[in-house]
Length: 286
Image 1 (cartoon, one colour):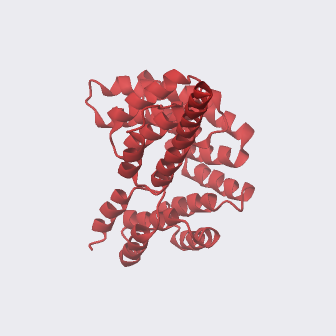
Image 2: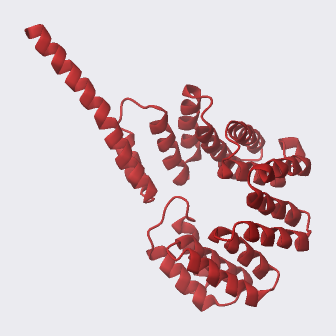
């Protein structure tokens, strides 16, 4: 009987341990989604057993805190455990990319090349990931050829995007055209993206920002109003409108109001960081 009781005790203890980790992970994930990154790490770091989702979430927290070296180290461990995990590869690429942006001229090229490799692997594993394909396209457009960038690679990627998502393909083509200074063509592709996805507020927002940059203020204002009506609870749209006003040095009082509303809103990791909004707020003269 003693042996049976001991077996049941061990079994229950093991089951409780398995149940505890998801609860802790869910709590840490909830804190992450509320941009409380330090608090999320405080839940995750004491865990002795760290599976891939736990390692990935730790890495994302470090990334959001600007601790890119720690992010790459943790995410590399996650990728070593699951080499075909597209999401982990993408986050590892982002972390290497930020290390390239913030490191010396001697180490930056190596980090940039690693970022490209991770993005390419992530896209190959999950071509439907808009975030991964977007980051890879940005890399191809911005990085010099000796680091693996280039317009030809960008063209090929845009063609692949268009096959699976025509609206996203037009948006990607607009980025390519803008890079080539073919501004009329870029604008027309953004308009086509809106036509293909009329209920996606983000498409309207993209067009609003672009025509504002081209001096079409009246249409831009109407498009911003339309986008915000479509997504009234999106803090990001407040930020983007304020950012547009500040870049063009107009409506600064309204920009200040928009940023103040943004900073009071509940943000997520997908929204621009509070630090960026605070930096923009200073430019309004407040």
